Length: 430
Ligand SMILES: *Cc1c(COP(=O)(O)O)cnc(C)c1O
Image 1: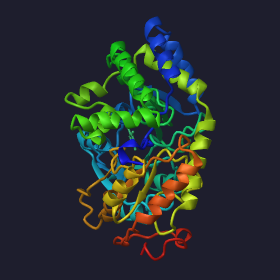
Image 2: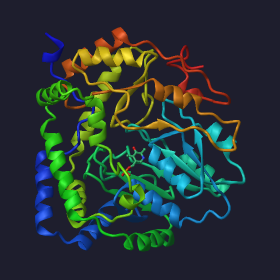
Image 3: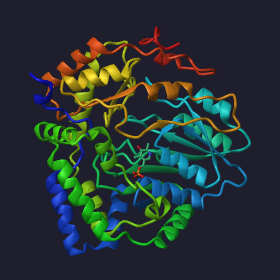
Image 4: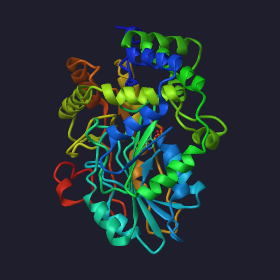
């Protein structure tokens, strides 16, 4: 089969159906009861903490930092891998991020390094759950109590059905319904806030934001109807060919299409409230989301993982829960792997989610993020999901095992893997 004739399994399916999008257009036409639906959403999501629906996690995080009082403590300890905007928001509010490496096997932010980084200037601790995994919060809850830190949990990638709104002991848990996220509402976020006073201050400030013009949301619905419409392997391949014929880099085109708040006016775009149809869509997604999808996706991920050469680092294989929002691996030859897999019809990519390893620019010169940087420089996201038949998942694993070379991961200074995670990869992880 010629390479150009083969269908391509897409790297990241948008997790919404054409029927949902059509429902969204109906919401645009008929002015749903915004306030009432917001109340219902808050009720659905509540775990006893205050619930704040916002336009995005970034909107909510910005609201948080505008209203959080950490006294003169200006450092926020943060898991070293996240999206650049989260770092930007921290900096915008005059805080210094102190990034901390994580263990790729169980995705735990290094407790040894966090303890080392805590000092008189530390005001908050921000734990990010990556790729569909979820790290237990107990250690962090204890540490936060001990040192009087505000505990932030970034659950943007961790949606796991209505029963999981984060850890009730976190001061804030933030879930995203952005367009590439699980159960997407093409934007929107839910924040659970422990301190009701703080939540009220954030709510009051949000109430001063303009409501986003519903036409913005409608345009988005129409755009995603196109994207979801092309998401069968056959049509996706046609689009790639068309883009290649016109000399365009389809990787860039797709990344740009699915990126929120791009272009100038970032802060202005961020500081809006969801429009009525947008709120109705978020409500609709919460009410109708089929958790079987998550289970099927998790199962596809586990099946693929079981076929992988044990020397290939695949993120989160030791996690108790991994919904495989993404399936990333880290190898020493990412470019070769991507080329080989694409030739086999698997749309592997090094950058499907715009995640980055943060630089340590804090005064904690004893810290570095070498491990995170190395992992992110060598990451390959694989198009493994419930949409790929088992036989094709197996074919992808064979192709990958044949080409992938293990990544040597140096034990970074002071880094300590916990004993529980040692047995499987001792030869590649120090
Ligand atoms: C997507 C994402 C965000 C931002 O979510 P939005 O709702 O799009 O603002 C924040 N953190 C992480 C780790 C993410 O993946």
